[in-house]
Amino acid sequence: MFNATVLTLYPELFPGPLAASVLGRGAAEGHWALDIVNIRDFSDNKYGSVDDTPAGGGAGLVMRADILAGAIDSISREDRPVLCLSPRGAPLTQSRARTLTGGPGLIAICGRFEGIDERIFSSRDIEEVSIGDFVLAGGEIAAMVLIEACVRLLPGVLGSASSLSEESFDGGLLEYPQYTRPREFEGRAIPDVLLSGDHQRIADWRDERRKEITRTRRPDLWERFLSDGPIRRDKNKEPK
Image 1: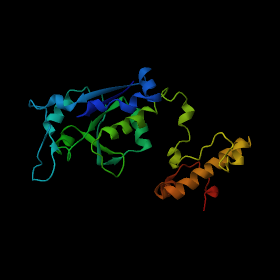
Image 2: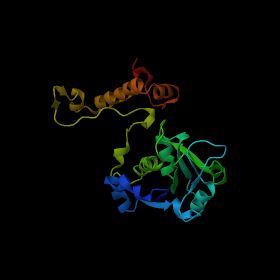
Image 3: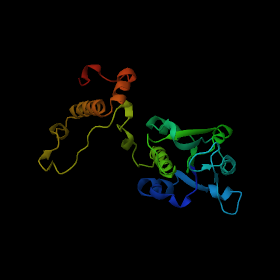
Image 4: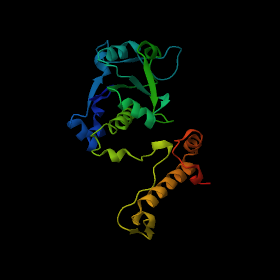
């Protein structure tokens, strides 16, 4: 079973959306589990404070390494990576989520204040992970994003393995457009090819739309696809 442990100063924020819909059902069915550790429980003072002023001066407060180390050391790691949600970390990708899902789980640290004492990262072999080029008030929402990205990939969580096929980033491309009833909405009709019943034509149309959307919306992904995309792609059908 995939085990996720979250270290946070705000345990009341969890499980939040992780308990809803298919994720919550997946946990209830035993596909994954979530444990929450309150970092304040390891404070060395009666006030439960976990931070102090930054060395060298500056605004804000910094989370203490010794207190955070106590929280980390209280957990059985079981070969799970310890990940700290941070805007300076390596970007979270679909590929990284799949790799994490193949393991026993993860331990996520939610930072607060101006940051965390740098010494904790090397002393406890912590990897920093970012969910985007922006800053949040804390790592809790980012941790939820990280966990959902992994948990939804676990067998049985989404119910059907086909739900995970041809998603965005599969094969280096974004997903093709989706349609459903009604056949026409405010003068906009479902593309005829999708109603043709011709599975090859539909597959070709979807492949072309994936390429077009990736090229126009994410030129960085498109350039990467052209340079090292899947061998199965047909270069003769690339949009110009």
